[in-house]
Amino acid sequence: MFAALTPLDWKRRAIKYYPKKVAVIDGDKQFTYEEFGKRTDKLSAALVNAGIQKGDHIAVMLPNTHYMLESFYGICQLGAVHVPLNYRLNAEDLEYIIKHSDSKILIVDEEYSHLVEGIRHSLSLEKIIVVAVEGHSNSLGGIYYEEFINQDFENASLPKVEIDENQLLTLNYTSGTTSKPKGVMLTHRSNYLNAANFMYHLNVKHDDVYLHTLPMFHANGWGGVWAITATGATHVCLRKVDPPLILNLFEKHKISLLCGAPTVVNMLVNEPKAKEVQITTNPRMATAGAPPAAALIGKAQEILGLNMMHVYGLTETSPFILYSEWKKEFDDKSAEEQATIKARQGIELAFNGETKVVSREDGEEVAWNGKEIGEIVTRGNVVMEGYYKDPEKTAEAIVDGWFHTGDLAVTYPDGYIEIQDRIKDMIISGGENISSTEIEGVLYKHLDVLEVAVIAVPDEKWGEVPKAIIVLKDGSNVTEQEMIHYCRSNMAHFKTPKSFEFVDALPKTATGKLQKFLLREMYWKGKIKVN
Image (cartoon, rainbow, N blue to C red; front, side):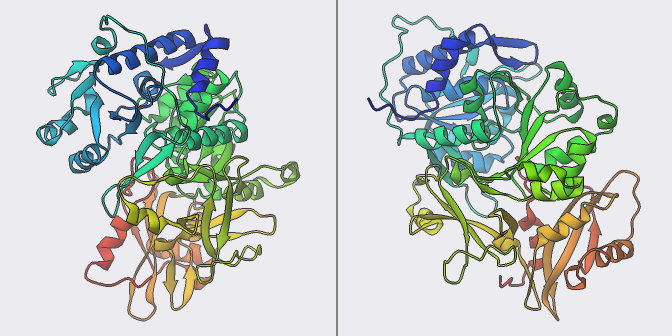
């Protein structure tokens, strides 16, 4: 009576119970679950005809369109492995990933085909499938997606594939900011249980309308590609993050749920149109990817009426391992206090396994006092199988059965975990540990600050000291001395940045994470950072 845990079974369920319900909205196009199911089956049949078998890897470089959704189901129901590619990477990284992943076929959006042109000759792909996009041309050759899935086959029936829940479902590559990207091996089981967490803790219901603001290539849309289908809810695709369009879609499609990194939240609250629109659906928005400032959460709830939910995880954990659970007792707290609570990473989710904060000296769990700092570690149902073809990096990350996240945190008396910093981002000045995220949280409360990154820079006396790099809001004119005075009035003097720099933009990954290493490199070139 055993049935393998696989999110693919949710497509069967959705078609069975919601065949005529709108499953996917993509611009002017809509598909019911019945239609969506037929399109994914046609993709599967075409891939079988092209020689794809169970265990084969297929790379997919598509934005958040219905084609990307179809590829997850059409590829994986064959027992093949979906390899989502970040279309914001450079050609060198894409070449490495496509080769390293052993992908046999590439499905690519026409807008991003130019990224493959220069490396095409070095790839040993058996086939390239191109999704046509108006206003763009295809110089890669290959076959267009619609032509590919609408071929006439003598035998179009799909093979019956026995799924082992512990086999690979997706191979997701990390951003590779300081080294070559690593291939995170995620199984049917880990994806299933992560999506179950997504459904339960984000309160996903049949009537939800979910906006794919978050890139689907990022940890499989945090599990949204599976969880929304599981409940028979509606996927609304979004090709690019466009704040005015997102605000329009809230009302046009009655969006009730979305996910995004803090940088996306910041874009929405600072969009001029945000003060004009009336959002009646009170959408729930999950944020993760970087520790969000309490001030930012407060603005999102006040200006847009979003019900902010904070989750935490990594690609290596499928990705959810913590969420900031809301308790009834918090309802009576002030808006500022509520935002501060929601900024914490929180507690374990129901289906992921065990997560705790441990001392980096002896490996013992830190005291639940909100003060003792340690590293977040986790084990259980959602942790990756390892890094693809990289046993050494796997052994570094998973020690004695625990995955080490590299995030420094404290645990409060109620068990809620709060990140203080990445290990590499913690500032050690004159023997004092200073959290860069704590300083950023204070600076985000300043009315003129749009974005901020705090890093350590070398200092002859203290070894290193905090430096704040700030993007100001349009029309703002704040001096360095004014910012120093503001910080000294709102935090301990030793934590106050010793210098401030005002810039037009901060470097970020495709999913909105600050790339602090790029900022640090400017100041540490030729010097050794000891921590």
